[in-house]
Length: 111
Length: 113
Image (cartoon, rainbow over all chains, first blue to last red; front, side, top):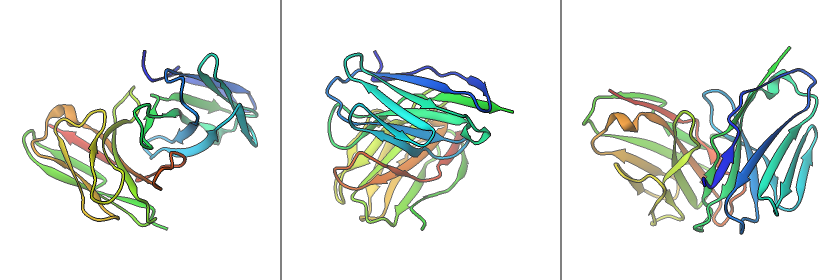
């Protein structure tokens, strides 16, 4: 099993839609989780951190299910500018502040 | 406000050539990393440097070497480039002991022909 797995998509949604992505992870000891956003041909940038059961920031909600070892990202009222690839990220099980990146889920929001 | 600066942004190499990718950060971060990103795959860690003077192998170190020149600079060297090393390379930095909020450079697109 890969350490971090994501549905690659693409998710094609109209503006205003609500969309959710899931991510599963293998290291049950992980305490922190992250969602990064990567625009086409750009570097990844931190979108949200998740340390407990979840986190909310405006239209974005991240939820954590430790029992099932998955993290979700919910985007409400999708905007054209939300079109990007969303990377699920988990600290490396081997130690010192290294991150394991999922392959990403691509979102395309259309008018 | 430079953050993490990578050079060059684009490079084409012939098989067997060598080159060094440069990375510099101005945020006084202790830890620096080199990742590669290939289509359909997540970023994979090549090497990292927890602090000045230390370097360690990541997930895919074969064919690469690194140098932590000082606290600001962390370079990645390809001694004999191979087509399998065609990729986008990202350098990142973070505060020591912090996993939240890596800062990435804008990447180097390398093609080996």
